[in-house]
Image 1 (cartoon, rainbow, N blue to C red):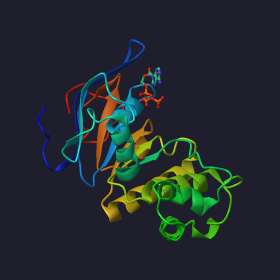
Image 2: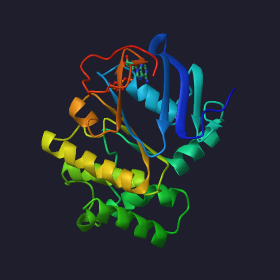
Image 3: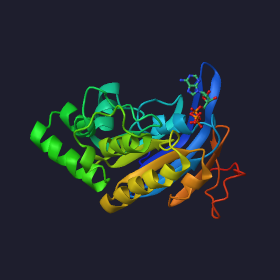
Image 4: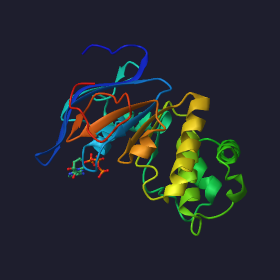
Length: 240
Ligand SMILES: Nc1ncnc2c1ncn2[C@@H]1O[C@H](COP(=O)(O)OP(=O)(O)OP(=O)(O)O)[C@@H](O)[C@H]1O
């Protein structure tokens, strides 16, 4: 095993993965630079979520290597991968998955509370992010009854509250109305840029991919050549 270049925050080589014999990744190689906003753009079922799960240590690929900050992820035992996810990564999915019994700031502060931060510190950090994301005024509301765009902003705050190295966003705007999509995404990308946080975004929406620094087209379990003109309609199979 040879360590990847130092300036890549994440680096993966020749990832292959199948579910019950049905292939989802067919040899994907990818590098992600620190602070970059990278979009994986492709149709549903093309393997984007599987790649995010491999990169974030949720899933160990059948074959291939994943490295984070020059350390191997694919060979770590599950407890170490879990710590890595908790301490260095944030995750935003299509469904914000907020806990209904907690209010907004408690939901946003949850990753800090789970890793043992004091309630006062966790609340201060959560409230700071809620203010930055323009939802400080709903900090004491319960999630039920909030509009979808606000619930998703709470999920963004929860992903950023630990100041992670990398945020993985899997179709983060899928449940939102068109008008809310760009707004939620701008909020995420500008907060990430300000704080030097790397974002890897999986999306089937070419408009959303335009918010990224770099777009990698995805189709049938393969990554294509990064799009220069951001025309995502025809992924070109090749090694990235
Ligand atoms: N847990 C699983 N069990 C079995 N098959 C799966 C599982 N997860 C994904 N797949 C299959 O693997 C392939 C790639 O799916 P994946 O979710 O990675 O793609 P995607 O591009 O993220 O699409 P989507 O946006 O629909 O999630 C698909 O054929 C999908 O049905």
